[in-house]
Image (cartoon, rainbow, N blue to C red; front, top):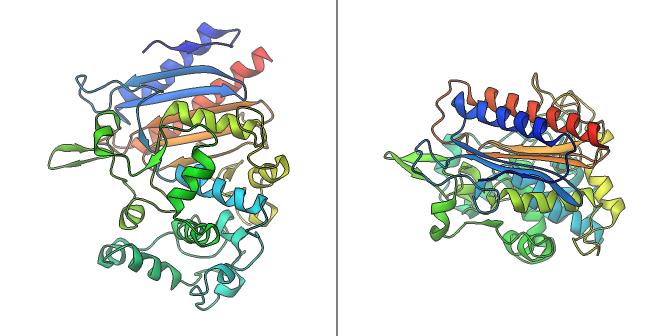
Length: 376
């Protein structure tokens, strides 16, 4: 696919650098294909697909406009956090209200002090996830929710950041109860439709499998369109922690919504600018360790030897990543976003695909920041 380069004054050198960085990840065996989109609030600077859905050159090429990727934990930020932000903006959800006020069954030892804000900043003290043997033993989504509601904090709430899928399973259930409709329906009506994210969805139809990046193998055949995350899979494909599928173009529209301060493309507000600023600003309550957090988003500096945000993104930057190989980082001071979607979970040929991917992400963020600084 031809690259789209619209607004970088030093376009050719920047284009060559982006291509070299992304292609290096394919050559090193971290992922078979990728989509890169870089832009500002009002325009796309660079958009390109690389490689293929699988390692076979006969499989479809990756395309920013049509290749669907399993977003994995990027779902937390794009769907669940945005849904919570909308409910907070409308006065229907309060950040410092105890979770038990919304979920009365969540009343185990030590849970009374856990607030909605703590779920969003991963400071609840809950463990990261249910161990796989426990998860496999649960028969269905109802049993999963019951098990999560029975959890108790492993560390004192508010004392440290422990990244936890359980936090967002609970947030998804809070959104369901406060809104009065299933999480996917609320997200579809209140987030995806207003922002024009027509390709973004939970549980994609089997007819879309031919343009969905696979994330696993079953008896030697690629598995595409089935959520990779085991917790979201147990929940039936719709969960607060994972389950969303999207394209590079759709995520670019979402990133532009963030950079516009909460407005739709037509200029009307989806949320108030102050609410969006609150959610995307590094939270003082989460400054209890090296992994810094905004509300539902990761902040900088990140607790990584090689940061997915690179070394040059500004102090107000925020972003999120997904285990399957997806990422979105936003630098509001530069009016800049960088989206990289890969399916590194699919049959990597590298011994260290995650390390390679983190290097690619960081190098892309730095390259985009330098190109942005040269043209502003």
